[in-house]
Every structure is written in structure tokens, then in C-alpha cells.
Image 1 (cartoon, rainbow, N blue to C red):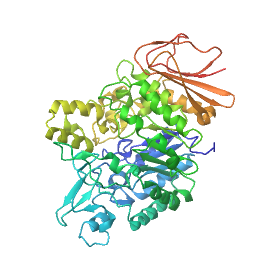
Image 2 (cartoon, rainbow, N blue to C red):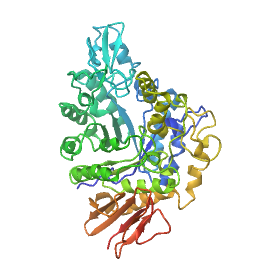
Image 3 (cartoon, rainbow, N blue to C red):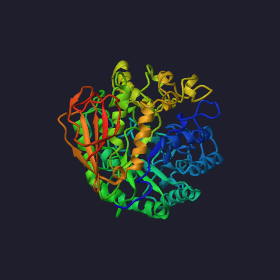
Image 4 (tube, rainbow, N blue to C red):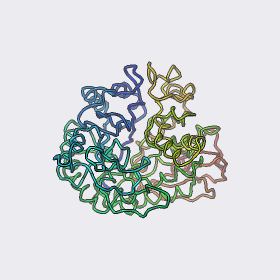
Length: 538
């Protein structure tokens, strides 16, 4: 297996709007990220992924881009970005940015031209039809929007303010490649490529579902046959010319597809964020996780990719609620479940990603009213279900468990006003538990979630087996325990995470050296609720 810097790295995702506000306007910004680089260095981070900071009207918090080569006014200037990049590199870290090229904002000059007339030269840069299909948008409601002026419909598989680019048009592709190379020439270290599995569409109709004007069309708009030549061209015209790291957001891509997507021979990206285990996150909107299902999915990916390509490892991001409040237990076993879940994923084969606040165990927010939420997807879901006859209280129960805003509440730095995030009014309400759950309270506590993450990162950096070793599922007699080994040459490590709230009988291996644990008082014959351990085997 080829060794590379990005395989050995630990990455950290920054949602800049919620990370740190440097100017007191209540919105996190680029200079705020720069201010916290020493914190990320202390944690042990190698690569920072920063979510979109491009010029945007913010319908979808920056994922609706109106200018790819300008910075959003609220977040700073290009000079601020250049300073951030310089400071990241000065600390020996790397910076990757979001690349959003499935769609633009409807306020992008390209789309303004495209919608201006039927015969505009950029009309075909987007997807227009006289008759729409019955597809449902990923954000709810129809995936097509009527343009009154020209009488045609344009496709938007996300918000109606995010029209999809027409990747079949060569001029569109060439213009995107110029933009990508402009950023790479600036010296950035790679991209997380947003919604890239959606760029090819199958425009055939779907069967009408009785009583439903729109039907989910995922199979028509993700990983559609014919996408690979487009991805290969993107790679060859941009990524392949630089020593960078690329991570594709790959909804609809499965383990059997990895040769074309991420193999070292044919792959178009270094790794992908796969979505197969994300279906387990919304398991009837209940707390906890079916550990057997989780083992099945993650083991399938581990074994399929081993020796072929590389995995991207994560349990949190900006599009999902907090893992300790969904898969874990944010009450009695908050610290234990936050660290057990961390241990479970972090030591698998792949590059681990940490989402901001995950390293201190941030939880879902107790938002009670719809106006507490900002997210366009959350609002669409609320009004769509209301129109379908769902009761307000039932919808709010759903949102309290699933809204993306739970992961977007401002970072909790300390117990001072607004958790040290801003001196102004935060753009999104703070989670009130910041008074006890914050960075400052955990940095000097050796038993904290933050300290556990630091220990995990240090361990991975100092043991090659935890980077390049092969993965094998290990069986225990408890269905809530996720256990696996990593093996490299003569070295073998055992990772155990009890992901349940009951204790499990277990026998400690003879001669094993304990490397890491989230309980101080340990029993050689039992794993406590949400107990995690890492052993070096004799």
C-alpha cells in the first residue's frame, strides 16, 4: 500500500459561520478561524477542511455560491483567506476547501444570464425543460421551478435557489476547471467535493405514486451511469496536476463501486464520504444505534477498500445532528458515550475527520419553536409536512431529533457570555449547556472528551499499525460491543467500544498492553456501559 501524507493525517472540519467570531457581528468568520489555529495545532490536527466561504446570498449557508472567486462579505475578504492559508502552512498544517460544482446560486451571473432568455448563450449552462418530471427535491417539494419570464422549468435537486449546472455542456465544465485550478494555484491543499455524485442525471420519468405530486428520485440523480467520464475529466484537468487531497461527497456510492471512485489505479478521488451508514442515523428517530447493522456496513467498506483505496472516517458533520444525542447518550453517560463512539470509528483504516465541537462532546440543542431554526432544509421539512397534514407537535419532535442546525450551533469555547464565540448576538441560538460543556473546562481535565481525542490522535500518529494495518472484525459475546483488530506485520491492536447502556461480560486478553481507555476504574472481566479500550496484543 502506497504511503501518503493524507493517509497519515487527522482532519478537522470547520463550519466557519459557527466557529469563532472575530469582529463581534455574531457570525463566525475567516479571521476567527485564524485566531484558533493554535488550538487546532494543540489538538493534533494536520488538515483543516473549511466549509464554503465563497460569495453567497446564504440560502443554504454558503452552499449556494454566487461567485466562486470572491469571499462572502460576512466571512471576510480574500486577503483574510490568504492570511489564513499562510498561517495554516506556517504551523505545518494543510487547508482544504469545499468545492460546490453540482449547482450554483440563482444569483450567480451565469444563471442570471441563463434565465434571461431562451436564446441566451448560457441558456444551456443549466437544466431547462418545457415539461418537468415528477421528481421530489432532496430538500422537499418539487425539484423543478417554473421561470415565469421564459415559461420553462429549471432543475434544482436541493433548494430552488440552487439551480443545477448542466455538466453535459463542455463550456460549463471548462469554466469550472479554470476556477478549480485558480484555487489550486493559490496553494490550497485539496478539496472536499460537495454533492459530486449528483452531476449526472437520468431524466426518465418515475412511476406516479397515488396521491403524491412529487416522488423521491434519488436513483435518477445520484451515481447515474455515465458519471465516470465526467469525473475522470475533472480529475485529469485539475486534481491530477497537484499533490493534493480530494474527498468526494458520494451519496449513492456503495462499496462495490469503489474501484471507479477511489482505487489507486482508476479512482477519481483519494477517498469518499460514503452515505451507507448514514441511513442508520435516522433509525425511526430513536436514540441509540443497532450495533450489528453498524458493524455490517462499516466492515463491508473496510474490507472492500483495503489494499485498493482509502476510507474517509467520520461520525459527525454539518448535515447531521450531534452523534452523542443520536447514537449515544447525552444524559447520564454523556462523556462515556462521546468517547466510546470516538474510539469506535477513529482507529479504523482511513483518514479520520473530526467535526467542530465533536472533540468536546457537543450535543443537540433544546430548540422548542420553528423560529429557533435557521436551516432551509429544516424549514422546508416543517412546512412540507404541515401541508401534508402532519401535526405541529409531531413535526417539532421530528426536527428536535433530525435538524441540521443541531450541528451548527456556535462553538462552545468557554463559560462566558455566548460561550466566547462572539461579543455580539449569535446568528443562531447558543446551546445553553455551554456553561459546563466547553473547551476551556476540558483542556486541563485529563478525563475529558477533549483529552481523550488528544490521546487518540497522539496514539494514531505514533503507531503505524493504526494507519496502515488491515482491519478485521473481532467477535465478543455482547451484541452492543463493536470490536476489531488492526494488524500490520507482527504488530496487532484490539479496539473495543461498548455502544450500549448496559455492562457486558468480557475477558481481557492475556499479556495485552492497555494503550487507551475512557474509564479509570477498569474490570478485567467486564465492560461498563459505553466503555472503550484499546490494547496492544502480545
